Image (cartoon, rainbow, N blue to C red; front, side, top):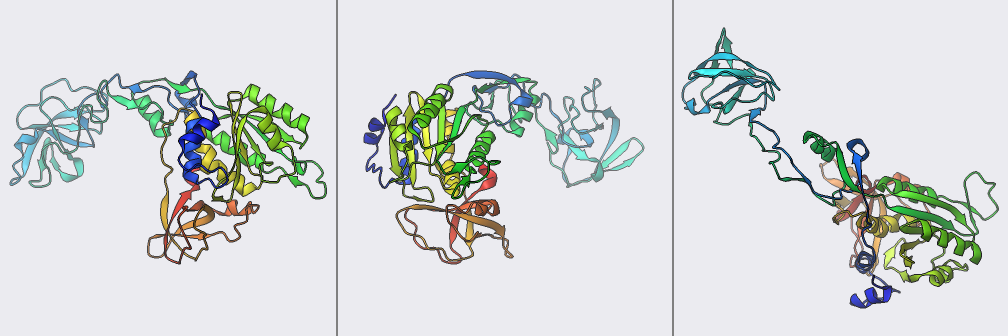
Length: 421
């Protein structure tokens, strides 16, 4: 297990007082490790979980050559492209039933979608393209090619091929694919246990009588909901006062139960509280000033073997640092294969002031313009305490470290919430 000092030495230009986003993510990627433990769950319980092993196909899918539509199957070798073709209908083949008799020369077989194609029949003409008179079907001369409308055996999956890859998050499509192989259970990585606590004497739980100068604890609900959507087991430790004994007890309790601790508040420079001191006393912790906005103050480390993320206290900064820094780390710990977050490009509808030398995340509203192109505008006030802006937004405008001011019409990257929330 690398110490934080060892990781810092491996990063060229590491500066905890002005840390670039790329370096922060690289540091975190070296710190966190996938958890151990595998569960075998029924398919209905697997959505969103991470696959612990490759799934190998025990069959070809489809298992037979079959018809892609309702129509008439015949030997495509008789097509010559210049003359209409008349064939006698030898019978009807339904999906799920093998056709036992031979289809001879000059004959075709009426087939339903999914019907097995007997040997020698390799082309299907859709019913609506034909003319039927009694038991004779006339097929147009130049509308078909050999092999049209045929699904080949194994064209989806080959016997012995890898159907699903270890490290993939299981989607509804993956569940359908597993079911198509007759699989009833899948091996998944055990759930990540994450303890969350809010800190600060000014923070109160909803439902309490609000004291003058106090605020209700919104961060608890945003962070725990984000954790729920990732499929974590969440341990809620509520609001912890800025008192050394209470903070130490809360962090020790969290470390004893969880793989990860996430706290909000108490990591800003010059903060008049005991949170930073308690973190440093209990574990190997670094305190960063990241070149980002919002979310500059950030703490990272371990208490024992439990990974610690100390987020800022402002509600928007909490969500942005979670999405940009914590979420990728949690996915790595869950055993998920790392993937770059998909970013859309949209034309900016308004000028934006931006200082080069930090990464900025501005709340944006993406829409389709009259010309069919994606466009984006900000939600207005970008203060890190304006939580309503995160409700209005459908994405974050990501302005990279070197980016300067943005003019109207410039292309900008957008992290769309549908991908992460």
